[in-house]
Image (cartoon, rainbow, N blue to C red; front, side):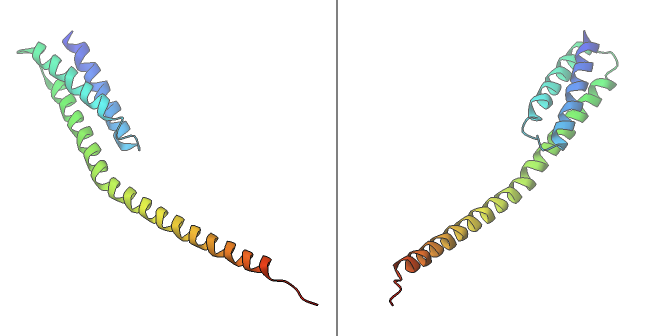
Length: 114
């Protein structure tokens, strides 16, 4: 049973690292937490037996958490910057469209006299 929980924890930790590296860092929290829970259960079951695999699982889970936190902190600011730029360009394009419509209205009001 201890080996089963160790292997499940290891698989969950590897999956968490893969998801954390991809742009799915929010989803990576789920397997990272599951990995810690399985590793903790295996650690409590192991008592005096060998715990290298369990410790390795904890290390991988910590690496996954570190990558998730790093990406959350440093990519969220860039995303906010991109959103602000998009909003500014959108406002500028609306103003330009309003000016063009006003120019069209002026041309429609212009009468040609013979």
